[in-house]
Length: 415
Image (cartoon, rainbow, N blue to C red; front, side, top):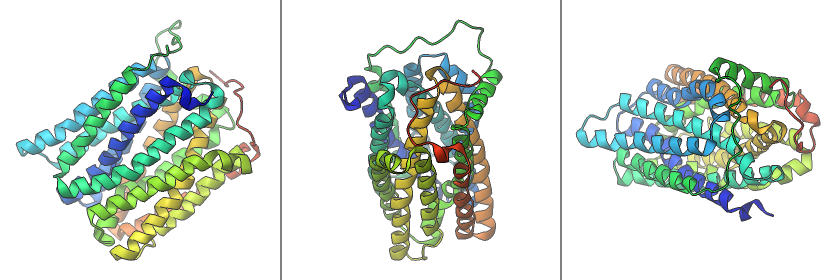
């Protein structure tokens, strides 16, 4: 049976489609708000990007064990409702005339924390909702929907930020999170009973267990290292991409939105190509090759000429090819983790991945903002690309290079 025929999977699919659409508005909207409404500097944008990624470290450290011993659907619904409530504070403070950069910082951090919790629970929830042999197909379908949101969300964000004031454009996302919570509430398949037979979990032990399980599994270890390194250098882009496009390339907000939307088209192609690429090269080599191709595509961004027409062409090409290859890599890496590791450990391992990536991303965002302010956004982005190109070497010199088929699941070391 196709995974799409599963009614509960379709509800999860719908929930993620709605919230993913709105999340793109917020992801692009908060930096746009900071630049256009609050005249943020590169350093402030670096801090905003850091606050959008640092919660991954904090929540990743604290939430993995909690997710493993809790019913995950309830965690997903709660995270949606928290994000909706936090985002509604921005239009409220705008109406009262008290909106400032610190409120944007606070909203970014709280929404990011709830989003990390959602992602950890979602990654752990999916294997209990569908069969193991449907995981790659299920992840690909969810990623394809995220890609459609990537196409429409940023484009709509750009238009909304021109037609409406920034806080009210961001508020659209609050509604999408509420709708997502409703869809999740209609899922009927019972979850596997969480194991609460042992002593109450201690978060430090859960963190150690998550990293230990990921590190001891030789096919998951390079995924952890590449994820952390990619987050370090990739976060330069989250700190500087908007200011680079608006101030250096002179794009309008609407044009920037449509440019980013091109990445959604690429990501949609990547979601459809993930399984064929894995069959052609093998799962492990496919992860490494697609990550390398994505890094090389990112070179087009800092090389873009400083005018709207040609600059847009370079950014669109980078988004199309880079997002296609990055999405294929992410789908295969997520499916590999879910296939190799037991479901009872996925929350802790997911927390370890988010903690490592979030910590490195926060450092990278701060460094990117500082370098962008000192040397200019273009030069800082060139430095980031140089780092990204080296990341796939981790996979090249690891057991991933010999991994041809997606494993059927052969246990977990060190739980």
